[in-house]
Length: 446
Image (cartoon, rainbow, N blue to C red; front, side):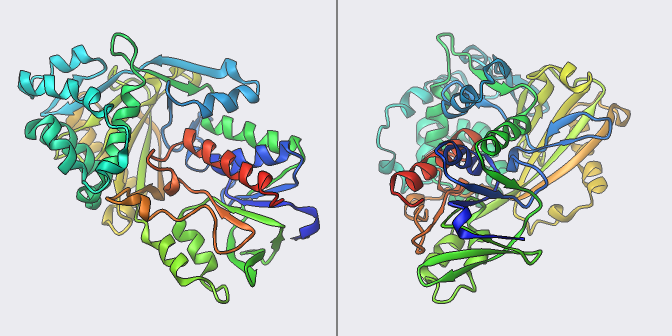
């Protein structure tokens, strides 16, 4: 199958939230759009699947914060406001064989692994962080160089260092202060007058929201084509003429928007004649970590905590997220959904573990945290791997990010690695997708 250029204004590669948000905006503006996606459904890292008993759930855990505006805005445009679920955050920390509740400032005052002085310093950290108005002033610092003097060595070692090491693995010492600053500043902005935090979720899951966005684009004349893998970009001079697919088909359009990970985009252009070598190198310069996310379907709850950070160095997971302590288990046929998240380099031997072997490995660690856990509680499980799950926002990251504009006059890129100083997430993916669509329309590219 081949699509002629005269029929298509924009071809969008990737049906994650960036691509879908762009497709919605362009289709609603009367532009002809095709979205091509390698997976068999929409959503990217927020896509959903069915467990053996028909329970539909996301492959990776998701929620959003009160400070996020782009997600609820697009949900409102779709007329789905009644499916927004809000609830107080129930967070905690597993440290030294104990679960500590850490949902409010009062909880922090009872966190005995730190001295009273260190607890107070940690509690005041958000206020000190929010005084920073120009993140460029700290961009030359690592997280440790910036944060340790603010909160003290003990708080950094017990609270922040384990989270950094679990989140960024072999790259933990490279992560820039700006990444942590923005996290703390945003989370501080989500607290209510009592210090509590409100989270939000889309009833039915983010996979349903992605499908609603795809359906909206198609209602306005767009096309979303799944199971379509790109093999290379075809170019002439300073323009992209078509995309060649692995099935031998070509997709032609006047303009192109690429949303997958930067190294994947680089591979598609690597054989283009006279391609800008420096541009390709910039796409490959940004480092990524993969994520292996083990989903457990249990017949009972592990604990009352929704988000449990794992700060014990002997455990391989950054967090244990019991999704049904946020969304009602009734939405999952009474089952309890738990995610175990691990970030790692794809060269790590664990990355290639067989699914059952990985489950056995994870179960042993989880049972040490929850001694009451029995294997019979697990009714189903799934293991999902995303090789480009987390860009590494290292020192001076703003100088490493490729521009949205490519060397090709009719091609833009909008990826999770370009969301900075914010970290990647569905809220900002929507923002970037709409911004790219706005650029295409207002600059009369299509």
